[in-house]
Length: 436
Image (spheres, rainbow, N blue to C red):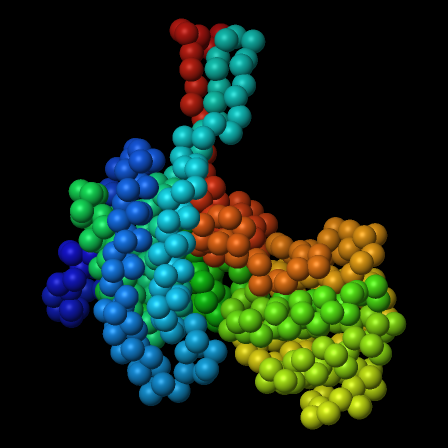
């Protein structure tokens, strides 16, 4: 964003409160223009942005290195550093995500419902942008692009507040977004990055209900609870991703191992990786040793209950870490897995609902009746049958990208794509009717 690139110190922008107020006011003004843009213009801007991302790989990686250096100096965990790291492949995937968003149908203006009243009134329920969305996130700089693309395509202005650990990378990405907007003569204030990591800016943003219509936090449970407790603006959230996988007595052994391994190790630092593994007692004898062997070979620490230990005594290299009640509620975001044997599917469902966070949970079984029972009775945003929980993702769902995964029950649940970033209004067509 050209306008923000010159902002370096708080003395140049005045107080934090006035700076954030200005961002909100400008975003609200820009949102009026965005709401009327044609799909073609929006798609052209996104296409330009994708090209810019692909053409600036070296400079993006250079800025990212600054954040990685600072992160190592600050003692960030391996999982957090992984979330922060840019590679050419991840940057290419980010550009592809933008192109996928551009290729999706534009939800703005979509007619949801039409009613004709006896008096001839033609009532239409039409999808419209929310207005201004504030997005607060940590660690993963690709969120800057995903959120900007989704908000822009759905006709919303957005204010982005990334974490200090990704400040250089986020600033570089924001500059590319601003460049793409300017090339198409769209106000750069349509997408704005808060140019400071001072916590006071977050507090100011959360009080800006005059101009900001929705807040979406993406990050750890502490951040999300802080946002919910301090925001005057409606918040769409998930507190944490404690995801569970249940291996039923009729699970295919090879499939069970592959899905469990993928759901844990493919990228353990993300919210749809499993933290708890529940295994039916009748399958534990032949499944648990195979799953444990695969996990140990891939560096996973297993925390096991006493029943599990009895099935794992002969596993080479197995070290026993006693499972506690607290472990089952923990979002590790690391190569750690809680393992518990259950007596039947009823206990498995009860355990998932008790210890999980209503995010992403799965069952592996060849028994359709058991699968449907699990799908219907597990109270989560997304429930899987014979598939990895890692698929709970906007890109994988064909949404192009996602602005977050909501575990709320109002407005949106699961991956939030374009439609979830809109609301609606009624448009009434009359021919002179008056109320009697």
